[in-house]
Image 1 (cartoon, rainbow, N blue to C red):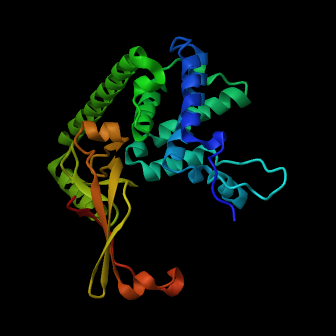
Image 2 (image 1 turned 120 degrees about the horizontal axis):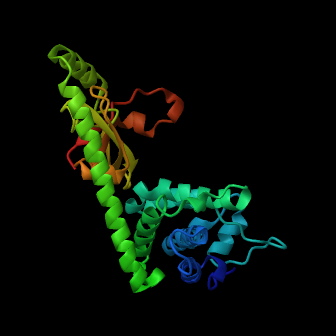
Image 3 (image 1 turned 180 degrees about the horizontal axis):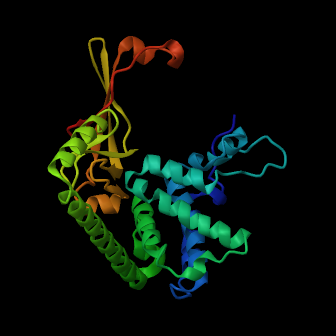
Length: 313
């Protein structure tokens, strides 16, 4: 019987972190508006994200199609001849991180975007990083900060204290710009709303109240017109189950990512923007089942209760 050995260096979280430091050092050889800075930042993100996942458990990096990858990830020598370990693609890395690190959820899409730029740079004639750093730098530093904190590090451990200070200012400026942008958007919709006839406003309010149901999202008043509207988001915790007689209740915390009001037409996407207008708090989604439904196979045809996204947090 084999016993797990010391993990091979290729999936070791400390080795991966050291490699991300190496890539970050290369990135910082260039100014932020240099395309090479952008390219090396994408390499840094790729390796740092894998380090964060391996920090939780290296088996999370294993491509499950071949069980030998799992054996390798826990330090067992695979029996397969000429075995070469295969890890999951970067998009799956980001998905797993968003399921395991709540603070990463609103940053997942920016990671996918940056890796998309990297792929475009490497596999086409396009030059996405020639456009400068305004489209990726702030989110890159935000992602790095979240991933580093999950491993017990700080930005200065990756990029040094001087650049970490710059990163802090870049992040703060991005948040400020997000707040300004969403404030302007709300104001514009409020102006249009106030110019509508009272009869039209009432008709739209009734329509919105019928559309914005607790089963479809978290019901909140619109910051522009005050009408019943919806927030939707993604889970950031495991479901918590409680049993009362024949009823089983599951509650799960969600972090909002999108807002929509069909009365005045206001739409807001992204946690920074939602936070800037007071809509960024977590909410609880509640699902109630009877025991027969909960333990039945999915195709047994039990009718479920409506979800409730407005339970107190």
